[in-house]
Length: 136
Figure 1 (cartoon, rainbow, N blue to C red):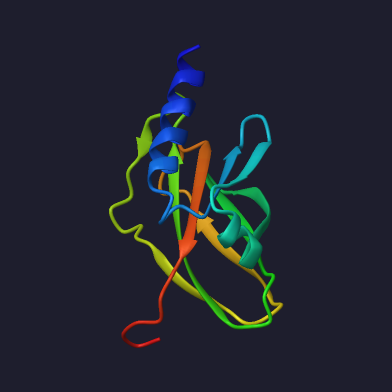
Figure 2 (figure 1 turned 180 degrees about the vertical axis):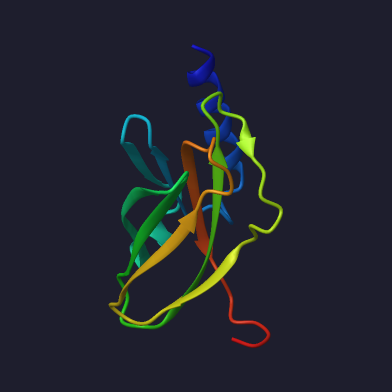
């Protein structure tokens, strides 16, 4: 019950950020359960989160998110990973910021994320539209 309430609250928060939230992919490495939820039809029409896979590397989890550009134009997106422990507490990694990724037209690209600690068992990958700025 508590888990559903927290999930509902997260969905409402992300729904309220409709301008920034594109697609959210969730992975639970204990059960292998995956969930890919697009929050913007416009974004999902351009960039599709195809799959999220993982493997254990030593004591850490290495995850790979596969993204596909549905458009014939090069696009910029931003991606951020959030890791959680078995009790659904966020495992903080202060170095994890939004990554800017350029995907060429009709290209499929894999992005790797590694858990910051060995107690991380869940991953939430947030994607949103990005902009070409600075040195891109």
